[in-house]
Amino acid sequence: MAGRKIAGVDLGDRDSFICILDDASGEVLERATIPTNGEAFGQYFARHAPMLVALETGTHSPWASRAVTDAGHEVIVANARQLPLIYGAKHKSDERDPEKLARVARMDVRLLAPVQHRGREQQQALNAIRSRHALVRSRTLLINAARGMVKASGGRLPKCAADAFCKVAWPFVPSELGLSLHPVFESIGTLSHQIRALEDEIDRLARETYPQAQLLTQVAGVGNLTALAFLLTIGDPQRFGDSRMVGPYLGLAPGRHQSGDRERPTRITKAGDEHLRWLLVQSANHILRRDAPDTDLKRHGQKLAKSGSKISRRIAKVAVARKLAVLLHALLTSGEVYEPLRNTHARRRRQPLISA
Image (cartoon, rainbow, N blue to C red; front, side):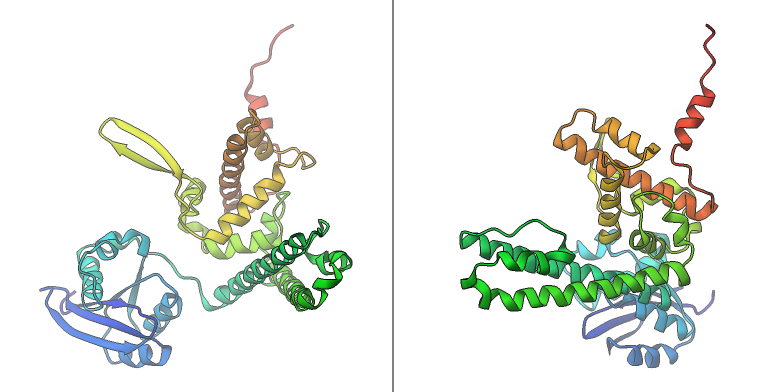
C-alpha cells in the first residue's frame, strides 16, 4: 500500500516509546514518548492515519491494543517470548526497541508470532479466576505460617481442608500463641469468605454467561473453574487447526533440542498460561486417583506410571494433563457428548475375532 506507515510501540509502566517508519523506504518518520494510559493512547493514535502498529505482550498490552484498534489502526501483538532479537540485544534502549519492533513487522509480521488478546468481557471474567488464585495463595501462605509457629512451640495443628482451617485448628493453638495468631486466623477466615464469593461468581459465569463450559465439565475431574479458565484462555477454538496443538500452546509438550543428527526431547516448555497449566495438572491428579471413574485418560496415565516411581508418576500426571487439554478442545469444537472409554471401545472393535 502506497504511503503506508508502520509503528512500533515499547510499552513501559509509566511511559511508552513509539517509532513510526515509512513502509516503502524504512525511513524513521517520527519518534514519540507518551504516558502509558488509555487517554494518551487514544489521543495520540487518533491523530494518525490508519497504520500497522506492533506492540509486545505484557501487563498493558490488552487495553493498549484495544485503544489503538479503536483509533482505527491494525494492531499486531507480538509474543515477547519469541523476540530474542529485542530481549537478547546487548544494546537495549527505549529508543531502539520500538524501532526494532517496527522493522520486524515491516519485514514479516509472522516473525512476531502474533497473539490474540481477549475482549473486555472475557478479560473481566478471567480476572475473577486470577483474583481467586491470588487469594488462595495468600491463604495458603498464612496457613503454613500458622502451622510453622505452632510447631515451633511444640504443638501441631490437625490436617483439614483450607475452608475449615479456622474452625478445626483454632482449639489446638497453644494459649501463649493466641494473641499472635488471632489476627492470622481472622485473615484466613476473611480470605476463605472472599474465595467462596468468587467461586460462586465463577460458577454463575460458567452456567449463564459461558454455557460452553458445561461441555467440558462432562469430564470427571474438570469443574467449572478449570472449564471456564480453559475456555477464556483458549479464546476462539477455531484458531487451532488441530486439537493436538493445544498441548504445546499451554506449555505441556516437551521441548526439542536438535544438533546435527542428534535430537533429544527436553522438559516441557512451560509456555502459555501458568495458572491454566496448573489447573489441568490438578485435574489430571484427580483423574488418576484410585477412586476416580475408569476412563481412557486414567488408563493412559496408569500405563505410564506402571513402575510406581516418583518420576514416572510425575510424567504420567503431565501426560494426562496434556491429553486432557486436547480432549477439552475437541469437545469444545465438536460439541459432542463425552465418552470416557471411547478409544478403548474403538480399539476393541478394530481387533479381529479369534475363532475358538
